[in-house]
Amino acid sequence: MPRILSIDYGGKRTGLAVTDPLKIIASGLRTVETPKLMAFLKEYIAKEDVELIIIGMPVNWDDSDTHATPLVKKFIKALQKTFPQIPIKEVDERFTSKLASQAMLDMGLKKKQRQNKALVDEIAATIMLQEYLNR
Image (cartoon, rainbow, N blue to C red; front, side, top):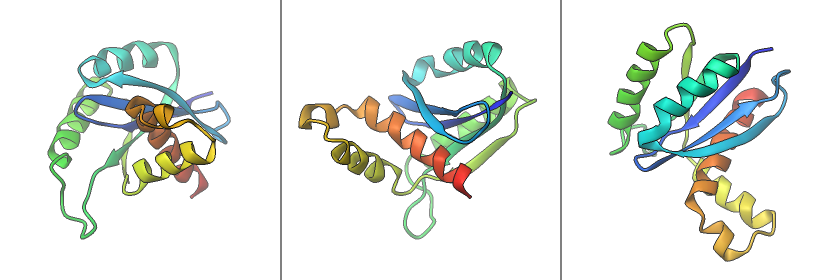
């Protein structure tokens, strides 16, 4: 059964999450260095059936673009060109990093673990995906 893939795109690293085959639960997949992201996605999508990609769109409180918005839009175009058969949906990523940090605190992770930005990115992608599933 196909899965949904969530991407929390960043300039240095990108957090990824996927659904279970029944599309009930979102789970962190991993964090990938952004320059290696497309190669990872090609390999992953060749092995796993992905029916939809959601990607966090960075916007300010007033809905204006952030400094990262053009980077994400450029990446979306590359995704569409590489995977034309998979629909891509933009989702609001405001609060996801803060929610991820709070989740890490709630899980009782030590300060050093909470400073692991790769883990924050993966959890943020998971939160985006679970919120999408809950809608």
